[in-house]
Image (cartoon, rainbow, N blue to C red; front, side, top):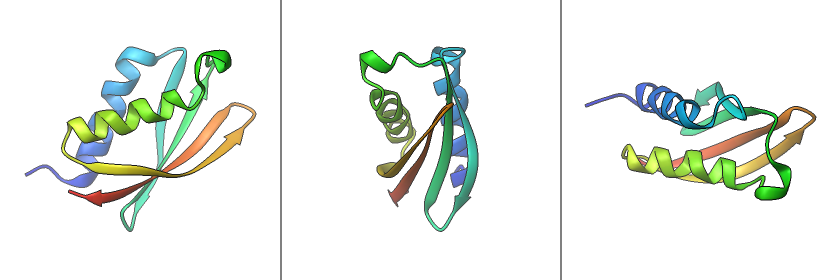
Length: 88
């Protein structure tokens, strides 16, 4: 069985494959069932800024992880989003 870190990294690669360079995800930390991802790029702010984060959540779930967004910290360059893993 694949480990949590491998799944998270694979999900980031899948996400970036289709959304970069407009938006790129980068893992900041992974601990205690929480994943912090930095989303940066040019974003389309009028097209559903938060949808970009939901897209990553969907990819995680397609890879077998049940995840919820627990916080979103908007930054000048994008956002830092914390996902809580509730099931592996």
